[in-house]
Length: 446
Image (tube, rainbow, N blue to C red):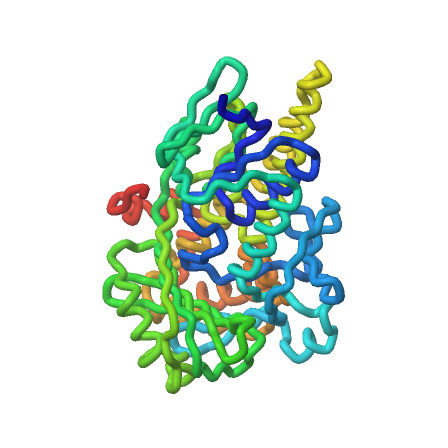
């Protein structure tokens, strides 16, 4: 007779690993299913950072304990080993197409604060996954690589997951299989979600890059003939290596051509004179409105599965950990014949820490900026009036707020001097559904 588990975790990413770890440490029988034959391999575009190291994010303060080599989330009381390479990141600099720089944090000032001045941490995600795999195995989690779950059904006393010719029975499932989750799709979680578009990503590991500030994240906006895109450049924790990551929501944009533009023509081109491409990655991610109710029929969705795009690595970790604790509580309540409250502990947190605290409309409005200011001239003009640095941060939800006063001044000047551009800026009050309507029409979920 096949083994029946207390919980089946689908997806061995940051959320899935932490969910399995939490449940395993509580003594549950846990199966962790992963589509990759090697769960530690990176096979998609990712900047591989832990963001918001100097502020609360998903109601936690992140700390990297360099002495004991542990990533710590003190608010929720968990940590795990990370003994791979890392690099401190001290500020974010955003560049308009003509080279005007807007800084979030003064690099020199932040460095002077030591570890407390870092806004993020760059790490090696494969090393992170190796450490997490060791940790889940140490708490008796059964790990099954090479399982691509395609079917989930509710049974008389639990739930069944099927994929790659195998079947797994459990009392609960935690769906941690990412933004393009098959589990969410087959269980009907996506039925009432609004589909905006896809986010297309292309990234490279590079050597020979010469950045103006090596411990800074640089964002560069670009407008091509096919549409708009943006690029992030930042150091890898491997000496002499950098990331280049290009993003767009416009399916007409050729990101390979965009990489060539960044390296040969854009304002950042001088940084790449001696650059060599070492390895490439890509990704296509669905952008939906979030899942409001993340639980039904003994399936709990966590991490990026229920998000509009991504929760970032540390947001996914917190989500996974809390989901593992919630399921552990629910299983123990069932065993003792008590009222089941464990699930609601997670769903209430989700609605407060993500749905309320991180409004997806704000995130998608950021994605919509090229459809508010549709030309390089527009963005060059408006942002040229932002001359004061914003607060040091590396967080998509707080970066815009840190420049709120400067942006208000820029808008006032634009209204007076360039009413044609000011009229375009008025579109910022529209819902992202309207801003992205054209892109939605030419896109479809993957």
